[in-house]
Image 1 (cartoon, rainbow over the protein chains, first blue to last red):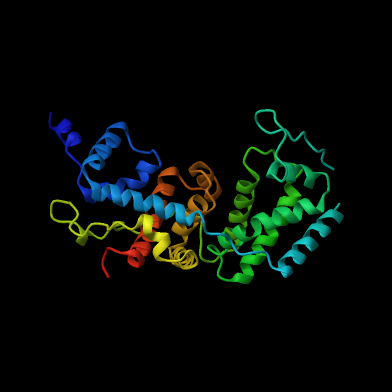
Image 2 (cartoon, rainbow over the protein chains, first blue to last red):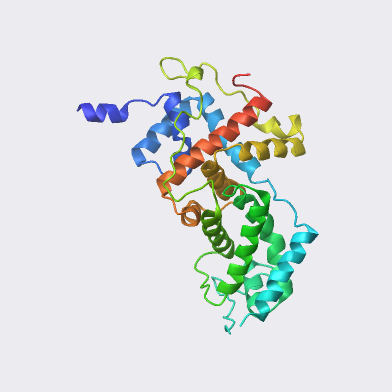
Length: 87
Length: 214
């Protein structure tokens, strides 16, 4: 059962970091997910890496866009008023 | 003329005051203030996204204006199958692509290469230069303004396709299905772009906060 042996081989850290997004996106197969979680449960370094990716996502979520300038506001109000007069 | 449709959100409750559904209802009833509120809510995000597709700030502003006009013209036929935000982004991306010089409709190819440099692993694939622990300290060691600046410029430095996906997923917090719809890309493609983009942002944070090659 050579194929099975390959499937069950333990993941190494270098593979794990490349699977992190698929893991967070829930896009891994059940067996891949199991192997990944098995690795994580015994590897504080990859667990740290995963935590850093989560932190990166959280920090990105705080980035606010620039505020509306008075010029843009009046331009867009103009767009609205022109649209109102359209047939 | 369009007829205002009953603004009842899923679950049968009335939409919250100031929600997009409520604003859409008011907009359809001809309320200019509802339009201004929407503009205040989304114009900045739209500009940021548009900038990824077109070569200049002026063109980005133009594309965003065209998008607002297209939204107004589409109000009568918008069925609300997607959220208003997703609809706006979809119009924007289509406009930007037809205007944009940088982007084309070809299928994106992510840059190859690992998200963590191979030199940080040993021959057995285990870490030799592991990530240091900094996450809880990120915000105490670097002030929030600086941290945001750092991330903002890291985001600007990403290849456009990665930037678009990270912007929509992690900054605007759209779902992966919404992002695939807005950008017309496959789930698999979205995931690869997101993976590369997030990986690079993490590297930038790491370089600032500790660990990794200096």
